[in-house]
Amino acid sequence: MSADTVRRLLERRIPGARFTSADSGARRTGVTLQAGDVRNAVQALCAEPGARFMTLTAVDRGTDIDLLYHISLRSGVVTLRVAIAKETSAIESIANLVPAAELVEKEVAELFGVGFAGHPRAANLLLPADWPVGKRPLRKPLTGSVIAQARITAENLVASGSSIGVARSSMARREKAGLPKVPPMVAADPDRLREFQEFVKRTGFGERAGFDWAKGKLRYK
Amino acid sequence: MRRQALFLGCVLPLRFPGIELAARRVFGQLGVPCVDLEGYSCCPEPVVLGLADRELALAVSARNLALAERADADLTVMCNGCYETLAEADAALRHDAGAHARVAQLLDGIGTRYEGGVRIKHFVELLHEDVGVARIAEQVTTPVDVTVAVHYGCHLFREVEHEDTRRKPRMLRALIEAAGARVVDYGLEDLCCGFPISQFDKRAAMQERLLPKLRALGATSAEAVLFCCPACLNQFESGQGAAGDLAADVPRYPCVHILELLALAFGMRPAELHLDARFAPSREFVDCFWG
Image (cartoon, rainbow over the protein chains, first blue to last red):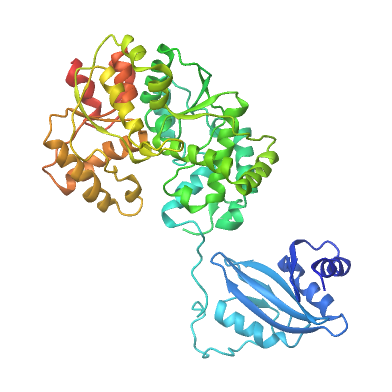
């Protein structure tokens, strides 16, 4: 089943769903979607003749955890891919839709610290009952691609267009020297600064590096 | 001469406004047709950020180059690191079709483009090649009678179209001599100031870079250290305090930018350099020689 076919099927069954990408190989089709659409997507695909939920896998990418729902369909495999932010690490369980997901969701919950809302089983499956809640064997610390030494520089660049920021002391120094408070940089003009920030956003830096645009900071220290 | 958009960078205008004043005075007196590069951003910084995210770095550099092209100007770069970043980005965009296509799409999103029509020069090159040492010497009214040791800065050796890595350092020496100063060698001219290492290990930056330089300078008749890169100047000037904490016997030197030296030689009043905003002993530099 081609990526377009899967996509059309999902779009028909889930009006308003947002798919960020779809790709396909000889017998594999991948669709990236939002966390809120996963239950409906699984339900739609599993309703197809001969469809079977195979398993769920998880990948810790540093800032996010990718959850990959693999469904066997018409002699191929469709993988629904969703990224969940580590800060929340939560998604709705599909166990009541697909009973086969119950154990593997529990495994991902225990090893990666992902919360599956509505999951029917409370007790640990793999880990001892007294295993510390905050300690997850396969979960890495929340970190991204920007090395520690570059983080302040990167945040300054996005905030002001300057790698060292435009501090009040710098403005005072310039004013004393008879120069405009801010050099002719993007920071001198709010409209230009907004345009610059939009430009940086379009480079995909936020997704690659784990940048929180609402807070204007990297998601990790 | 085609008009020149001044790429001031971040450190020079925000930490050393006096050097910006000196640059404007020197370029103005030499008749260099300068315009400000309105709306520019960090180049971006090549040592840490440039390596942390190449896609972002190239796009941000290309935006700066596009601003110069839109202003119908060539780019005169005031910082060694910015020069390397922008010259390398320009070369990457000319030689890497894939990178060019990705960047073109991003620039198109903000209604601009870069066609590769901007000549990028370090200001030392501009002064030496486009203005000329003889014309500079003609403007000198107050030869600066000092002996300086030169810190060239690693990125000054970067050549994109030439092979001779000593080309710009030779030019810098000629400019110093045109201002009336003498250059003394100390053997560690090519050693890094320590700024990149300081991002990872400040103590190593002092011990492995700045202290050996200061010790070598102590065996010479140098009265000041001369720079053409504001980032190196900043590292050297502010780092001398910390270096002194590690080794009490090392001498400390005034740190002077070549454009400050030229501005003084052209008759700029010392007070106009605003050295009072600088660390000691740089802020006493002028007093040493002009009272």
